[in-house]
Image (tube, rainbow, N blue to C red; front, side, top):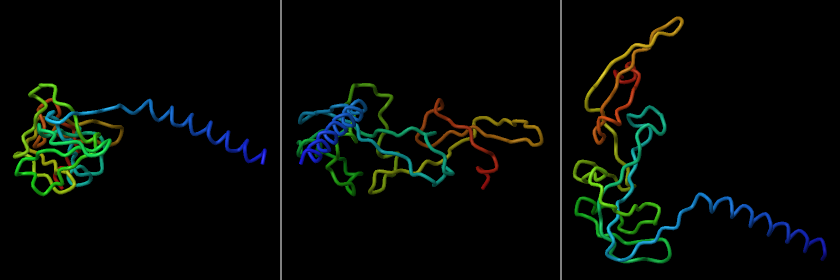
Length: 164
């Protein structure tokens, strides 16, 4: 019985330590009814992105009004008719409080969302072209402006991949 008690104490100590590590990365968010929030959507992986991660930042669409709170971490939003296929209840980490910066607002009409709140990034224009010289080959790259992005967020992609 003594060994079982020692094991339980050590497990409890390890759990407390791990919980303190994970709580550093968490932020406590809480909204009230009639607050306005943005809804997080993200680009589909692998569709025009060629498996690259993190180049195009996730977007927030909205703002939407919170109708009421469901439980500790879920909120029901008053969604627009364009989002009728999406379930109106969201986890708190899918929401961002509206601060009033109009440059972050992306209208929902310009983004075609599917049921999982994903959208497809489509290249719109080529802004620049460059050729990098390595020791034995040259790599051509093009700077692309994406459909729902601003000029500052344009990315460099391989020209051969873009032609495909």
